[in-house]
Structures are given as C-alpha cells and as structure tokens.
Length: 182
Image (cartoon, rainbow, N blue to C red; front, side, top):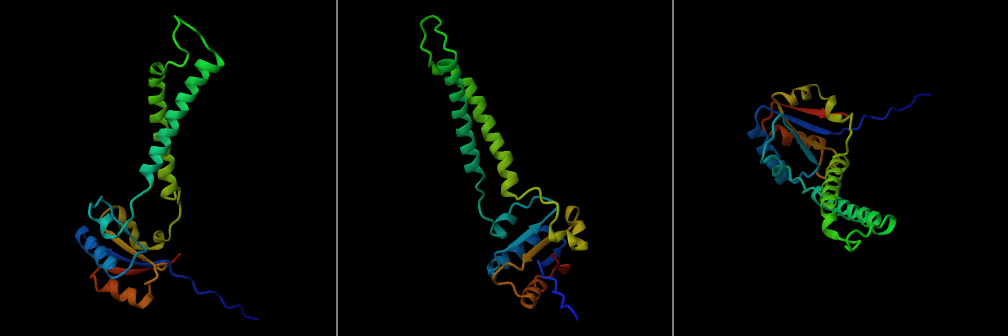
C-alpha cells in the first residue's frame, strides 16, 4: 500500500536585487501589476519602499492614544480614590478633590500608559516574536542583512501563479528568483 505524499506548498517567489533603486522599481511594478501580498527586505531603511509595496498605515498611533488616555484616567482615578475616598485629609480647608495636585501623577501615568501601549502594540501588530519565517529557507536570504535587497510575492496573493509570477519577476532583471518553501 503506497501513500501519496502531499507536494510541498509554496510560500511564494523571491527576487534578489543588488541595489535599493532596483528593489523600489520592482516593488512599484509589482504593485502596478496587481500584486498585493508582497513584502520587501532590505539591510537599510528605504524611504520610498513602504509606499512602493502598498503597505497600509498602522493602527499603532490609535493604540498609543488609547493607552495614554487610559493611563491618564487611571492616574486620576488612583489619586481621587486615595485622596477623597480611602484616606481623606482636610488640610487648611482645601477641597479633597483638588485636581491641580493630581496633574503630575496624571502626566506620568499618561506617559506610562502610552509607552506600554506602544511597546505591546508594536509586538502584537508585527506578530512578534516570530522565530521562524519561510524566507529564512532561502540560502541567499542570509545576505539580506548585509548587501542584498529582496522582494517576495506570496502565494496567498489572488493574482499569484507560479509560472506567470516567475516570468514577471524575471522581467524585472533581478540577480535571481527563488522559490520560497514553507
């Protein structure tokens, strides 16, 4: 009795470029050709690359704002509870809920809430930690942190076709095009 083995599925195709200009040009052409599920890898920051691959704006600023607001409200709530409810002290006839004295604590907890939201939100939105990614299976990808630039079009893209996408990437004149196995 023989068992038919499943053919390994393809994560995508990766094109390797030797300069950032070629990578940005390739990403723009891929986006104009209708590819949406792609990612680019570079050893240096490239300003135009984010727009070239059509990356969406992040929700992180909204999360940081919400974290700051919750931190500020939490700081005010802590001060109010401790000064008015738990341990009220009437000193000099001042009101128990004297908000000006709460401002330094509210400021610090606002900053703390925003910083924690930024830290946790960045990790969550980037799906970190991610100790394994299929692009690590490509031997040439080891140079992504030194001197090579890569564009990976994922097989999850609705326009992806192994042969057509391979020909498209070859037409961009890369150093090489490699299958990315999961």
